[in-house]
Length: 109
Image 1 (spheres, rainbow, N blue to C red):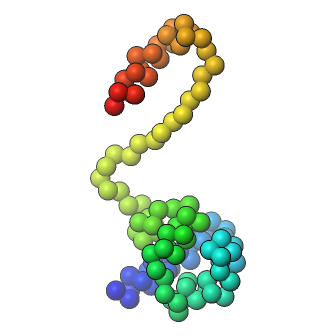
Image 2: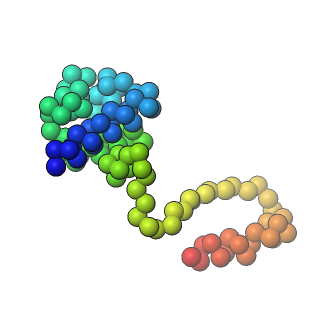
């Protein structure tokens, strides 16, 4: 268990440094002093899930990806990307582009 905690804290430090974030930056985002945040990274202060979740948000990552770093956790589900496209075309142009049937198929899923 201790090895897992040490690895998690080491991952947080590595990710923070790779993103170019200082301890002070992360601490400010958490509403803490830099010295208090340093205690978390050093393992001298407990890290509960809520703080870990806030750190993940600051680091722009999922908690599971911080835990499994440098690997990205894959649950086996195919990944998908949502795309929002705004077209400035007339309804006739939209149909001529061949998009009508494709949009309807996507919306039905």
